[in-house]
Image (cartoon, rainbow, N blue to C red; front, side):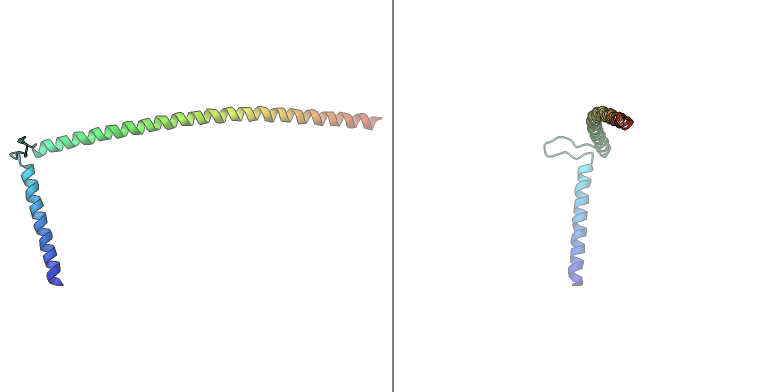
Length: 117
């Protein structure tokens, strides 16, 4: 059992060593790719990666900004609709209250008229 674990550990170390060697080969400023084009130096790779990150961040920020604008527009539409409905219901409520006051006054007048006779 111990031998199997030891073999796994050695295999893992061999794999890591091979991977490091491959990466160091690719990072070498003298490395020439299979198509004959010289590879970038590590510093150039970092700069390119930074530019790519900046580009992705700008795209992400633009996407968020568009999302915010869309949500704001939808919210404003809903707010306007709610305000319109609120005004409608307020006017209906006022009409209902006026009607109730008029009915109450009419009933009171009717009662006073009948009681006075």
